[in-house]
Amino acid sequence: MPTETMTSVPSRQLYTSEERARRDSTVWTTVQGVLAPLQFVVFLVSLGLVLRFMMSGIGYEAATISIILKTAVLLTIMVTGAIWEKVVFGQYLFAHAFFWEDVVSFLVIALHLGYVWALIAGWSHADQMWIALAAYTAYVINAAQFIWKLRMARLDAEGRT
Image (tube, rainbow, N blue to C red; front, top):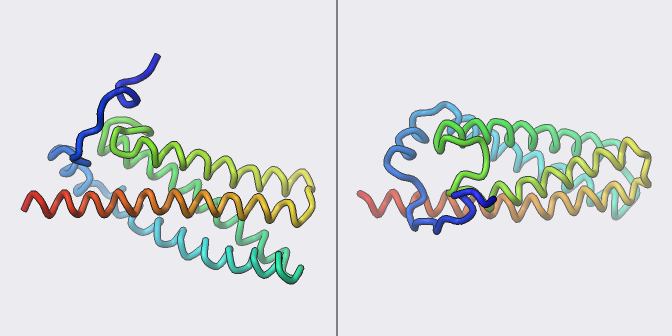
């Protein structure tokens, strides 16, 4: 049975005034604000290491460690983001304002965990790195979704002042 989140028509307003107040008063907003750029830096370093390995065959261990670190940061930001959504919107995931971002986040997580599974299962180094690159591509799309939402929130706030 579809939930109200999936069937309701979204408003042009990202946050209600109550949701905005909760967003602005919770520590989880700060946590997300710290973890998101940290994850992006880890991603950039890891992407460089993965590409280096893919082009030269050198640095498999460094690339592997960086992907595992990226996965750990991703899982941390997902858990803390779910807590943030609960505080702001009253539900842990798939809140109206971030429904599609959460959907894509699950794809990103699945790909990252697919990499970890391939690593543990002993797949070839190249196959592992291709999975990591697929995960990173999905991450870039997801990050762009969240950046777009931040921009929408700023524009919405500017329109109110």
